[in-house]
Amino acid sequence: MPKVKRVTQFDHDVIIVGSGFGGSVSALRLTEKGYKVAVLEAGRRFADSEFA
Image (cartoon, rainbow, N blue to C red):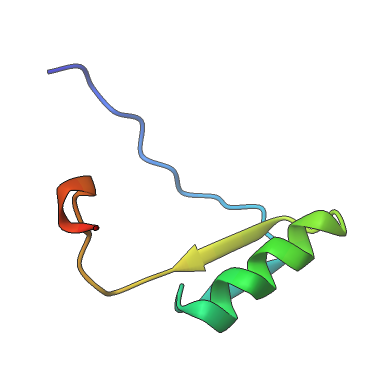
């Protein structure tokens, strides 16, 4: 397995906690205005097969 460089410095204008409806729309609108946005989500990941 290749070595992965650990990132110790971040450059974001806004950090949004939660990628639900409000968080995802906020992230979209802010990126459209040119902000650097990070979204943090604690929920589990879903596989494509779990969606209808």
